Amino acid sequence: MPSLPQFNPLRLRSYIFRLPLATRLLVTAIVGLWIAAIPFPWLRELGSLSPDKFDLTQMHRLNLFPLTHFGFFHMFFDVFAITPLLERFEAEFGTIVTLSLFTGPFGLLPGGLYLLLEKFILRGNTAVMGSSVWVFLLLASEAMKTQKANPNFSIGPYKIPTWTTPLILVLMTSFLVPNVSLLGHLCGAAIGYVWATGYIKFLVPHEKILRWVETKLNLLGRLPHYVSVDQKTYGRYGVLPTAVPLGSVAREPRSPDVGQRLGP
Image 1 (cartoon, rainbow, N blue to C red):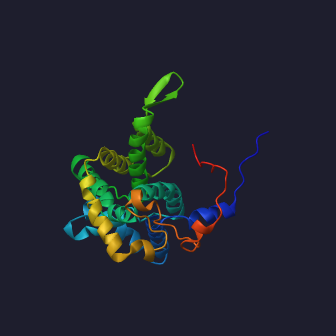
Image 2 (image 1 turned 90 degrees about the horizontal axis):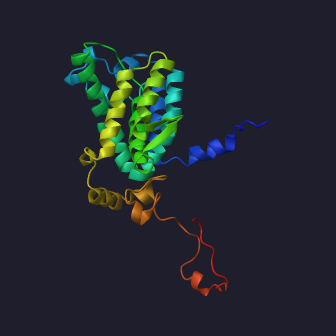
Image 3 (image 1 turned 60 degrees about the vertical axis):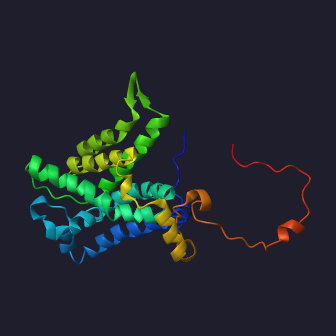
């Protein structure tokens, strides 16, 4: 009889300590805002994206609604889903790009699209909040990348296009989980598809500018768990420090055996 995988708190602790900087900050903001809303419940109303209450003086709602949650389980499951996706995104694009997008366009674009459709097309007034909009945005982006290597997956005799996976999950979530916004999730997925096609990559500052900022402020040296935008030169976490004194490697006797290659 197969044994169930056992929960290992040490592995969880190691995973949390390895999270990159932007992922830590965004997850901390989500959890912190939920904690703050316990003694101050008006914070939920302040951060919710409500079509009838939105005008030019309420632009902060477009930035706050992905960080705001109705209750503990809403927050917990969103954090559980968004953390590995954010970590993967930050590892690919860097800390500055991740923070600039998730505190700006990745809230403004799906939120603005939701307001447009809900208020002017559907004539509704359903308030939404929660980082699940980011979950489906990132899932859509990942599905488009996976599509290039695996265009289809099979379910019995049927071949399903890989890019439709987030849409299937949106529908399943809407049927299985009560009080979720189908339209809000679809808006998040739509922006993820557009991002993956490259049409809104202009929202990210040029790589030369980002490298100049990193070098000028010495972000790699000052900020722990910072991910450089220049993956080709520095790798994920910059140049790793070494305890071997300069020149000592040359004085070591060289092994006559051929070294073993790591990886394929």
